[in-house]
Amino acid sequence: MVRPILIFLVLSVLTITVSAQERRPEIALLLAECETVKGACEFQHLVRYGFRNGEQVSREVIFSGRTTHVRYDLGQNHIYQNRYVITNWGDVVDVVNRKLVHEGDGEYVAAENDRVIERVHTNATRGFFFFELKSGRYSRLIHPGKWGLPGLLSPDQTKSVSADRQGSGSIWLYTLNGRKKLLASGFTANPYGCDRPKPPLLWVDNDRVLTQRSDGNLVILGMRGEVAPLVTIALANSASVAELYRNDDSKIVYQYGDETYYIDVANKRYSGFDYDWINLGSEFQVETKNDDPSGRVIRFRGQEIGRWQTSYARTTTDYIALKYGSVAMREREGVRVWSTSNKSWSNIDPGWVTQIIGWIK
Image 1 (cartoon, rainbow, N blue to C red):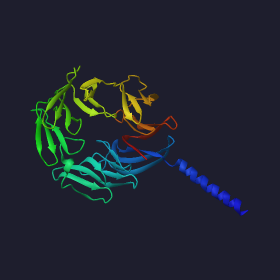
Image 2: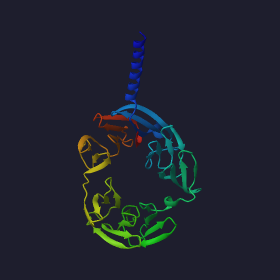
Image 3: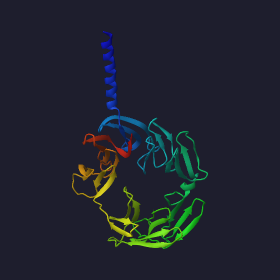
Image 4: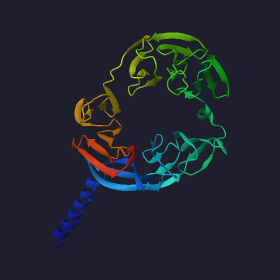
């Protein structure tokens, strides 16, 4: 009679253990949510929503603070080491221990190894500071090194380039030894709106920078100041802001308002850009333009998975989260989540979502 009882107890424990494992989150979505007082966003809560097999299985408030203290709705937030949320202001929240471990004094610059770098620019203090995640130490960077280089950092992080606004249209080279060198002048951009224009810059490699003499007239600038023509694009518009960047496929893109082109530096040519779809990452895409009241098409691996009136999304392997609604339009704000596990959408409706921070495992 003893053995059957023991077997029953063991099986019961195993059943409970397996059941608990089945409900344990495999991945979590971090949201910043507002708590209102008299219609204003008085508090911001960092909340973790756990998902397993595409279904929400948990909700946990990680950290709460007044909007005047820690906020996520201005600037970009960063997830570091699958554990820390770093705000645009350098605030650091430890998701595992559910607490604020550092209140930033300036602007987030980067996270590297065990350090979070921030730039402080106040009347009382100016300079670069670091916060060590393990020790909690916060101190000034006596030698900021690459972080102190102004403008656009080179791929090898040994130098940077920066363009003057208006004026001579000069492009300057900065190096780690503190030297500043004029590379060349006469680079322009079309005045547009209230912004003072300056030419876009993009490192092609450690020795060449892609920029423009004027809108559509792209050139390669070398580190000795040599300027070589690359391509000339006949732009349809005459009053837009020029941008250069690499897309998710590492292709060079030149964007001028709603005109977008691929730039092939090696072969000195450009081509039209298929701008019907925006890549959201993890094989998800969204339409760029659609007047259908049901919304823009969202697709995964080329297959439509739904339509929604938004293009603000955060993705990870097999999951996508889309924000919808607008407090300004007196609509409830929420998030829709879709996964490859159940191929269906579920809603998170807290009332006021300031930001989708991102996914963590």
